[in-house]
Length: 314
Length: 284
Picture (cartoon, rainbow over the protein chains, first blue to last red):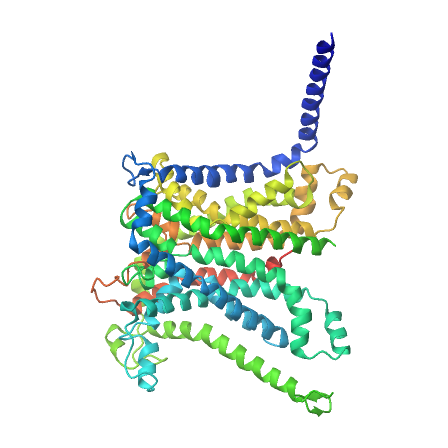
């Protein structure tokens, strides 16, 4: 008897839960319809390829050919392979470009704020490098920095700054410096956009009261400007850090990942495995390493983003 | 004021003058670093091939249009491909992201927060890794080497970022617009289309531009998802032209003319879209 009752109540409970699920759906039907394309995108273009890629790492997977199951062989051979560590080290050095981008963007944003005329022309010129395809600017710098006929080294030797040109293409550290410089030059305007937007949102009154209290420029910057930019800075840094590490076109055009593997940052290594050798399984294994390296910054981003949106609504 | 660094000279302080001076120095330097490379390239593109081993100068001695005409002739088909790919990418991305961003900005529904963070995680994803399965899936579904294949693939880059920017635009609109519209007889749908969309136009222009830029500028997918027999866009044509040590003589003038030809459309579009873009990057 007792069980019967509880069964019955469970049934009605179940029904009412079903009904309430249906009700929520009915209420939000328009919203779900609106996000449907986005959801389809997330599942079809992000999650399914991502999981399929993980599965691919367990195979020897030639592009367009038939895969052979090899278990964890790809991981083992990658970890034993010396150039992998060269590539890993190169990736760490290369990530310094994010710090340089931040520095340039911060100085530029603060400087533009100081002036009242020509701001439009100046920001327009700043953004030129970011608007043009990175491979285009990579090609342009390949010419400008060409050791034999490029204007940069020709002029430096002519002016006596250098006694002879530098063949940076055959020198690992010099190649690293070149790709880091070109990447910084190309992508700092993105950070500049985010930082300028956040600077514009700082209340003028805060500066006025800082002045009343006799704060000097450095103190004002430290106590008013910087705290207000903190979220924007962390958001910009975490986006750029990850995006910088996924760029391959300029490195490929300037150094092709060489000499040897000295400038083959993980993304370029992935590209070399996929395109050069058609080894898709190994390529994705390299990609997973990059994924693990960058995942921590996603959480930094989300935390700061959350904070920024709370402040905006408060 | 008693700080040692600033001697009072009426209203103007030495510290201020110094800051002002440094500001101009810094800005001039940055403008030069950004502009001079392009000026050099413009000059080089008019330089005849035989004049390359002389002294570099900003004004070429015997300017020639050879590089430009050759560059245009070589790139013509690829530029058409680029235009089709970039336009399609922009159109599809707007169809996906406008409704999605609107719902995430202004509707309440179960699962909203989780859904939005799924988008943010997608934005922060080192997407280069997806190239591997996408190449493979595209190859087995017939999307490899096709223009629709490129349109779809570029959504991976565009969608999350576009939703991030657009959501902000929709959020900034006044709170009770939809309710007011519904009082006047609009349905949820017509309130969205006839009231909200026109007001969010600046954000939509910004996102359309960024999507076009992605489709036009990308190298990774355009090189990995097309082969010589397929619809190759303009950017990957530049890759490999330096030869990677193949020893072949490079006609830099033509190459530089090509960089300018490929770089011009996004730059021109940017000049049109820039007023809309400036508001798009506020982190909120």
